[in-house]
Length: 79
Image 1 (tube, rainbow, N blue to C red):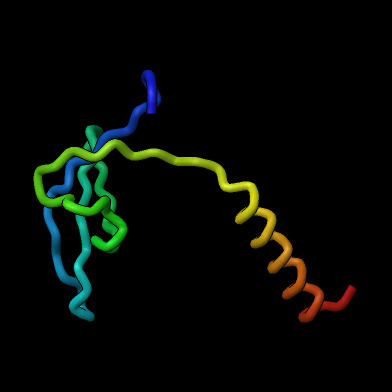
Image 2 (image 1 turned 30 degrees about the horizontal axis):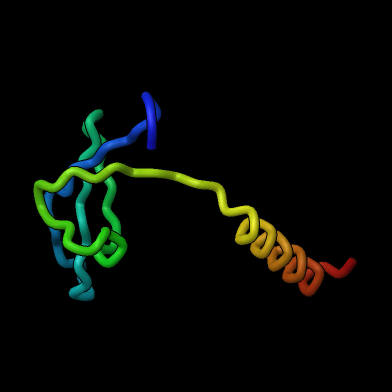
């Protein structure tokens, strides 16, 4: 990500949830935390590493999910 829109997070730690799955705890510069499955981190990531976080729009997946919602609504409520 370029410019002032960059979002940075530090991998604070890796924990295990109640099912034994590894959870990464990310800390952002403003103090907020994000807990997510550690498998979603880039390969080789670990505690104390800095990650650049990026968001991107996925038009194909957006359209696919909207169509699925419409299909389910039609099944439930009809036309």
